[in-house]
Amino acid sequence: MKFSSSVLLSVLATLSSSALAAPTKQVPLKIDFSVERSSKAPKSGILARVAASGVALELENQYSMYIAEIELGTPVQKVRVDVDTGSSDLWVPGAGTSSSYGTYDNSKSSTYSKVKDGFSISYGDGSNAKGNWANETMTLGGVTVTDFMFGDATTQTAGEGVFGIGMIGNEASAWGSSGFTYDNFPVQLKNQGFINNIGYSLYLNSLSADSGSVLFGAIDKAKYSGDLKTLKLVSIDDSGSKVDSPVAFFVELDSITAGGKPLASKSYPALLDSGTTLIYAPSAIAEAIGSKYGEYSQSYGGYATSCSTKGDDFSFTFEDKTITVPWEDLLFKVDDSGKECLVGVLSSGSEYYILGDGFLRSSYIYYDLENNEVQIGQAKYTEDSDIQLV
Image (cartoon, rainbow, N blue to C red; front, top):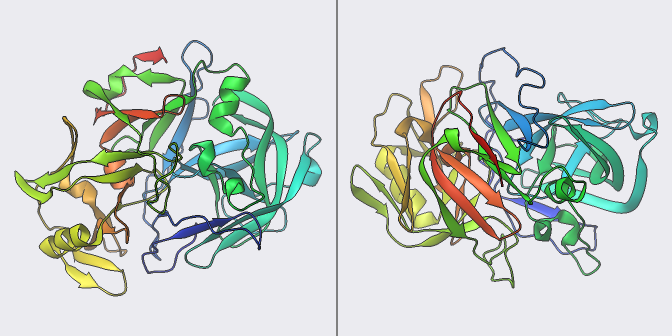
């Protein structure tokens, strides 16, 4: 998603011009400068494990988001997309649109079929993607999924496509009186026999690492310390309204502390969202944390400080499970010099948290879409693997 120099706080998803707007959610943060990263690309196929060890997808760390390469069509066309646990649809920039991450031309594929009109997503900065719902053959992580539904964007201003791997109740197609749901990628992996249960593990690795991974249908026990804590999902939608059953990965976050001192002690739902760069909190909490470490910047929409500012590590507690996030991971560089940073806790404008990559890098999470729960533990940065099917 493409951003100006301000911090954007919402994204709207609509099915058509007459559809109801979806509740707001946070999106990956970008500032108008290029963060210089290692030029070493992820090794093709390094994580491809099928059947005995699940299906693995390598994620390229681009600082503000995590990108994966997928293949669509016959013959295949390669497109790189932003992997997002906070949304549930894949859409890609279609032919005639512009994207530095690759585009897809349905006229060149023998396996393309249009499903219906009405694909439409728009974001809080005014960027959008519109087009058709379609079926296609899709390959990633060493497996090929056939008749996979996605958004084929015939017009778009958002830039890179988005690979949403959330729950079907949060699909963009579901909004509006004529809405519908469909079997998205995690569900199709089970339907087509690649995994036993609908779920996946997220391991973003360290801030300085070139890549992380999503492991569908399995857990890598080497990638976390101690045990995984099971947390039931909270039945609310992105507006914070109660719903009959969970539609997104909200869990209860009970407290945040730093240096043994409480920063937040009231329990609020928290969305575990890889499609968000930073951490968003209820306004009073975000302002208290931001003002403790920085000065408010109108241009950034948050609290800025020197990147050399020291602080205690943050502890996020879920029931009896605590995840520790290094202070350095909570700072986001906002200029080329690397001297000025944004304190990475901003206002959500709602009575819930959104825990983006600034938190998720420190955690190992198994997203269980079948049982409406997650399992969470402290991430362990290692090249070792101990993969077990779920």
